[in-house]
Image: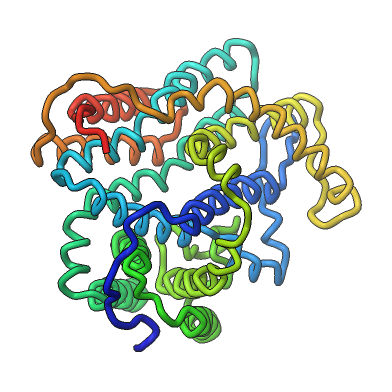
Length: 413
């Protein structure tokens, strides 16, 4: 395989506009997709949630619109650049990264742990409220996995420096073996190993980019998308790269080899477009959106459920059939209402993007790894249980807060 070639003389050591734009565009597309694809209906008792991409043949859009691979790729490049630029200890770098990831989650939990119970006492129907509470927490799966990638960055960078392309190839090999065992044995649970193999492999591609080692992006794009097409055509994989209602399996939960192939295609395509992207005037966009990305990600689903609660549940106006005239005419109004709800949330909670610098002392491997375990475990708990009434969201939030208390904010990078 020759799409990624020899080591450059000088790796990237400063902020990369391409990576900044990729991260912002990725998060923007996540929000756009989450706001656009729901098909919602309420019969007076149950809120049903469908997906516009379930329309036959439309799944091919997900090979571009499922941008989580690009987010992990951009995160890998940003982590490599940040870690090398820090010139500090790995525990201190990890502690700072954890604080920036986890701190904005606390205000979300502070609102959403009591909020469903308050709404229930005001007469909001139980089932729609539970749907909104659970899905708001499920969105945190990305942060739970990304904490693993961040925690592994110092080790994976050493493997990258020593073995280069062999490191992501070994991870890809792990994904191949995992899927082979999964589909030949029927043990679907083993597929969750690919949370590590697939997403760490994509994260590792970001290291290669940071060292300017992705030298044939066009070939990478063709190889990735070509492999994905073959896997979907002749393997057990569905065509959609997002989970669809009623589907027997998903390429996302857990991620599959087909998802990794699409990730390679996306990375190759994005890198191929890099010269054009970097010529765009994006300085003002990056300056404005960069400090607000996490807030938009965390709060765009609460905005969706607020509008759904008023329009679909309270007023009884189900969303029109996807692609219909009503859907096309109503979409700008729907999207505008969501933006109006998100805007005050953005103004109110963006201040929590920057964690406070409190004097907790010196970071060590023991404290930083314990912090990562607590933060990651808490995020996983919220992913599984959401913010539905009960003790699980409280315990998960306490784990995140405990992890933050173990970090060392004096070591600012």
